[in-house]
Amino acid sequence: MGKQELADRLVGILVSGLPKDSVEIQNALETGDLPRVAAVSHRLKGAAANMCAPSLSSAAAALENAARTSDLERVPDSWFVLQQQIDLVLEELR
Amino acid sequence: MSFQFAASSNKRSAIKVLIVDDDPISLALLSNFLTELGYEFESATNGREALDKMRWFTPSLVISDVEMPEMDGVTLCREIRRRRSIQYTYVILLTYRSEHESLLMGLNAGADDYLSKPFSPEELRLRIDAGKRLLSLEGRDMMIFSLAKLAESRDEDTGEHLERMREYSKLIAAELMTWPKFADVIDCQFVELIYLTSPLHDIGKVGVPDSILRKPGKLTPEEFEIMKQHTLIGADTLKASAQAYSEATFLWMAYEIAVNHHERWDGTGYPHQLSGEQIPLSARIVAVADVYDALRSKRVYKPAFSHEKSVEIIVQGRGTQFDPDIVDAFVKLESQIREVAESYSLRLPAPIVDPLSLGSVPSQPVAE
Image 1 (cartoon, chains in turn cyan, red):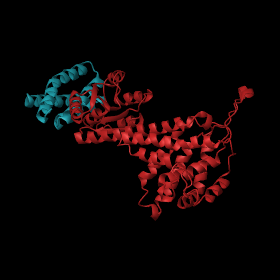
Image 2 (tube, chains in turn blue, cyan):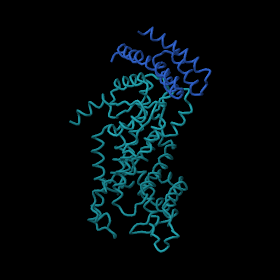
Image 3 (cartoon, one colour):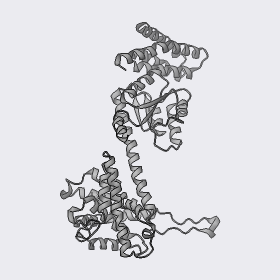
């Protein structure tokens, strides 16, 4: 597989995965399942780091952190920032 | 057929890899790297799935993420270690720099190495190479020692002879390494190799009939001639292996030792009556180590001699049976040699007196 081909494939995985992750976090937040929120944002953090998307990665890290420490004040704020980052990335890559 | 395999194995590596990560991007990247490096691999998205796959796909290398749903990487690692598999499974954990604590837990659970995300293909390649080195070393050491043990199992009364004599050989080689005369001949690798291969010195005994090998009395001259053949039988086997596997350079030292460890410095040994420095250094060292251990051991034809008496006999052989330099090194190391001898005899099981069944104390083998 060529480099460009690989990059295209990875972008494809990211673009198709982001909306699903977004829905999954939203659902978990609604049911108060913070461990699930942490797990999904953790995965997102890794994916973003691999894709050289540092802002997306650190936004995901912030939500992961807030969810893990059950910091109920920071969870909604971090989620808001993360959503913005997700939208930004999606807009750019689509 | 075998040539074909050798040629293709350059491109396609023999080890199988299992990659475990819940992040599809990470899996895609790893798959891509591994494909480029020519590895056969499978992937799983969590620890549970990984263990399921390991039932039919037996990887020797597992590269796993730490945090995953269902079963995390630390638990996976613990499970892999708990299950006894035929071969060792090398585990590399993928972590973030922030996951220091889970990394420690992972190493504690038996992970061999770790890689921080995000990593470069080059980094991954180097870590896999390190793992492969360990896996091949393990295979090599295990093979050598089990071969040697197999040969030994037919001999009576040898006990931990192989363990002790490889220690003596290593001590002597390490001492000689510091002597200017041997500085060019012995390096650390030589010391390692002699430790590794000296247990194979009597491998040819598998070809000597039991009636001679285990004869309780003195051998007749004819029987002794057959007994002497063990040097040549061992040499033939090891030489054939060394030629077939040219990468296995350690087999050449094993060969040298097997054929020459009964040669004598004065040229009256067997099988080829070599003398002096015609006898390879490795074999000259093993000759001293082997004889000392035989002297300290009880045999059908002799009692176990004391350390002092054994050293005395070795010194008497200086310049006739043995290389004078090696005897000098041996004498210099005398107290360390004694320590090894005694630490091994101490490690033999002491008679266990079970208070509940005092009547049936098993008879214990005497330290030989």
